[in-house]
Image 1 (cartoon, rainbow, N blue to C red):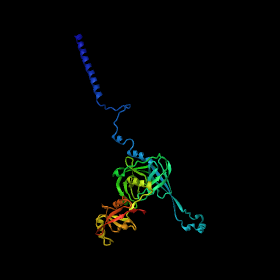
Image 2 (cartoon, rainbow, N blue to C red):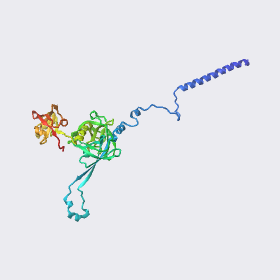
Image 3 (cartoon, one colour):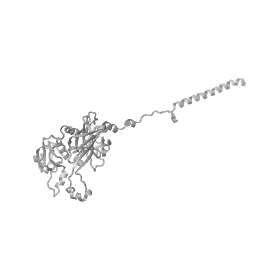
Image 4 (tube, one colour):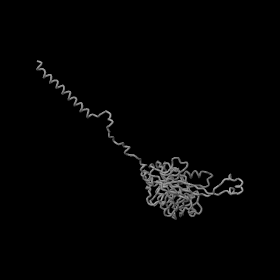
Length: 397
């Protein structure tokens, strides 16, 4: 019996071994296709998808790219001015000097004033654009490039009305130039990058946005200028004057200027479109002719007129209309010659409605020198049209 039972035992054993083998094979196969939860070995490298943020920003920001595009064309402008002051005759008295000896104060009749500003190169011939107040009445102008080269600058023209000046250096033809943009395409909220040398710290960059456009010089508190500024919150400090204000592409959209001591986080720049036209005239003629009428004025509304008219101490009664009130006529001016009077309300110029003093100034500025403007005024209850021929503004002070 046992002899015949042995093969049967072997057959059962073989069946069990085969089942175990197949189980092991199936288990290993399943493990190989399931995700692994084990930690990666130190010597293994796992490829990861690049971050979306890193792909968008890259290793450097758009500010870096913008500054690299224009930075080498931004210059530092150092000025020297000698002023002469009167000396008190008492201090020159020989008797007093002999009596007091070395204790007597020594007063120099002259003094050297030093100034600092910024600018940028317009073309390879060495033409530099800056602010008028940076180089005005300077006896010596020194221009320093970013790479350290230094040249003597010659002032080719100054326009105080727009606070712009052109300086020329002789530096060959290998000068970097700043790419110019268009201020007409600038919108509120656009990036604004100020480049310059504030407080003597060369090659300084600040970032902000365009806060508003067409901020008039009258609103800024600079009544002797004729400008509509770009307002920005990019930091602009003394020494930044004349430097460029850039857009996100590194193009010049304005010239930094008009720093107010009481302005916290507010700066102003001359639009580049205006600066282009002025710079061309300064290069050609050394000056810019500005037409003027010769009136001091204020914006008038019906509410302001009613307040004036209800005051029993008011000197004049004002028409309750929208327009520009003439508060003074400059003697021997075009307005005086045409018969404009104090108390007149300017309603139109060449059939164009005038509602603000800034608008009237802009219309006159854009007119041709010597052009006859048809000015519609209201004088009391009467409407008159007067022909005013503009003349050249000689002295803004």
